[in-house]
Image (cartoon, rainbow, N blue to C red; front, side):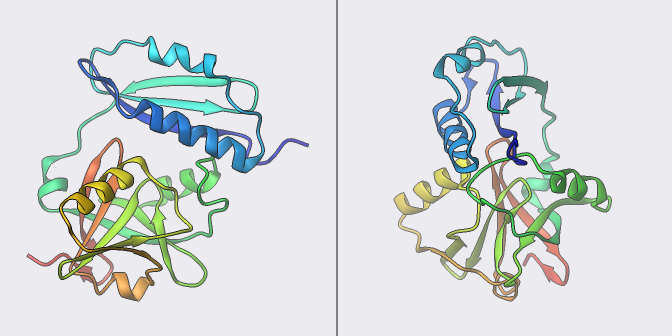
Length: 214
């Protein structure tokens, strides 16, 4: 019987001049996801078609692997409104214990969250059944309390942009904690950010009763 999590995927940003961003990191994580769900590894030769692609505009490239075939799609990506970066976005809560959390696999839950979000809501912050924050449906989550930054340590996908942000914070000697963060604790943060390798760093403006400080 085929594993019900039978399709692993990765999405990457591609640029006309710069090509694929963080290709090695994405393919490495794809292979890690494959191992976690018990699928056959992707042959290295299968990635060659992606490396040979050319792009005329900023593009979202998606790799999907079902254990036998690597499916590749590419679509132009529309930039987010500038106000999303300057003012922040609205988010809502969703309850989901995603497992294995470090694998990126297809699930009907993603489509359900995407299609049921009210107009104007950008993302869902995922809360597990112990009321701990884990991640967003397509982002990682950071909070800031004074000068200290915290992000969930476990039960989340180790995002490519998340890793780059952690490296940058370390270089800048910003105090960082990788730890459990409860829903109530995150709602006491001074700032909340979302990170994603296609969208960069996006601040949260409103989450229920929580609002970003001016």
